[in-house]
Image (tube, rainbow, N blue to C red):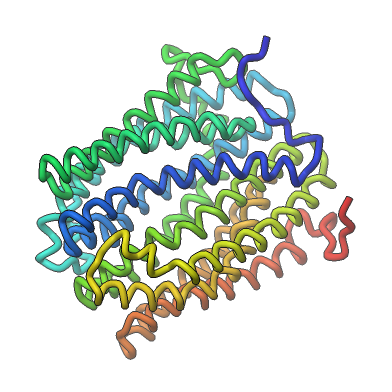
Length: 455
C-alpha cells in the first residue's frame, strides 16, 4: 500500500489544489524565515541595535547570495522531477533524486569552505562599520560552516514538493524552528554568547531539518525513495536540471548582487538605519514569503500539467494563481499598515530606529502589488521549462536597473528613500516586460488568451 502523501495536480479543482499546496509551503516558508527572524528578535532585545544590525542586513544578504543561487539551481531539479512524475516515469524520478542529493552534498561542502575563508573580505567590501564587524564576522563564519545541511534540506524539501508533498517539509521546519528558538534563548539569554550563540543555534536547527528530510526520503516506498549507498550523478539528467535551474540561479544571484549594492549604500547611513533596514527585511518577508509560496505552487502545478500534456489546465492555473496573489497581497498590505510599528517593537525599543523603520515600511507597502506578475509569470514559465528569457527579463528590469539606480542616482541624493525607490521602479518595469513576453513571444502565447473563461 502507498504510505507516502502525494498530490496529483493533473486533475481536480484547480483553486483547491493551488491552495492545498500553497498553505503548507507558506507555513514552511514562515518557519524557515523564523530561523533568522528569531535570531534578530532575541539578539535585538538582548544584545542591542548593533547586534541586530550585525545578524541581519549585510550578513543576511551575503548568506542569501549563496543560498539563493543553490535554491535557483534546485528549482531546475524540481521542474524536471515534477515533469517526470506527471509523465509517470518512475525510473527517471529515482535517478534525479539521487543525483540531486549528491549534488547538494558536494556544493554544500565547497560553499562552506569558501564562505568561511572569505567572510571578512566580503564584509569589509560592503562598508560594514567597525563597531559591527566584531559581531558580524563570527556570525557569518559559523553560518557558512554549517551551510551544507541547509542546502541538503532545501533540495530534499524541493524533491518532496515536486511530487505534491508539501506537508512533510513543513513538519520538519516546525521541529527545527522550535529547536532554533530554544537554543537561541539558552545560548543568548542564559549563556550570554551573543551573536555567536545565534549562529550556533541556527546551524544546529538546520542540521536537524536536514537529517529529518534524509530519513523520510530513505523510508519512502515509491520512486522518490533515497538509498544512501546509491548516491551518484546522472550527468544527462543533471545537465537538463542545471540548464533549467541555472537561469533561476543567475536571476537570484543578480537580485542579491543588486541588493548587496543597496545594503552597502545603507551601511553608509549609520547603525540606526542599518538596524531599521534589518528589521524591515524581516517584516517584509510576510509579503514575499506569501507571494513566493504561490509562485512555487504555480510552478509545480504548471510542471505537472505540462508534463501530462494538459495545456488548458496550465493556463487556468496561471490565472487563478494571479487572482489568489492579488487577494493575499491586499490582506498583507492591510496588516502591515495597521500593525507595522507594533511589529517593529519586537526587534528593538530604540525610538530612532523605530521611526526610521516605520517610515521605510509605510513607503514600501504600497508598492507590493507591482511584484505579483514577476513571481507568478516567472514561476509558470519555469514550470514549462522556459527559464532563460524570464531570467533575462528579471536581469534587465530588476537587477541592472537597480544597479544603475544605486550607482547614478543615489550618490546625488544620498538618503534612505532615494535608495528604496529602486524597488518599486524595478518591479513596475519588470512586470511590464513580463506581460509583453508572456502574451507576445512565449511558448504559451498561442494558448493563453486575455479573454479566458473560467470553468
